[in-house]
Image 1 (tube, rainbow, N blue to C red):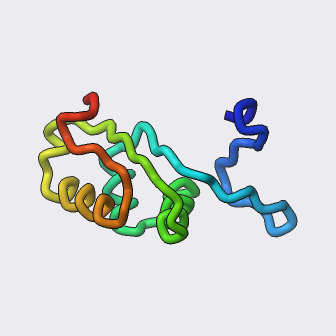
Image 2 (cartoon, one colour; image 1 turned 30 degrees about the vertical axis):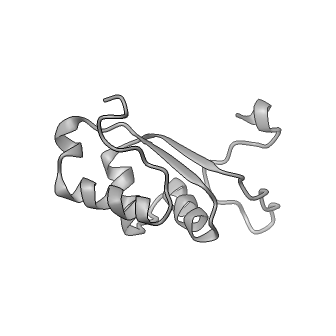
Length: 101
């Protein structure tokens, strides 16, 4: 990623003395677990990645989520509600049956 973008890959919040990274043109979340999708939909930002996603969605940055969830978990009501919620906010999240499990 660093070689492709010319920017360092970040995995933690920057220090106040460090420069801000440029705003992303788009974000891909892959693979996205059951927990990641449910937390993202609920606005839980307890990790660096979820914090970035929460902020990016509020900024209108396009987000694509590629689930890596088995069919039993994908059938659960919490997952379906989370998926619908994210889609309603403009997240591109393909419907079950269209992504590999």
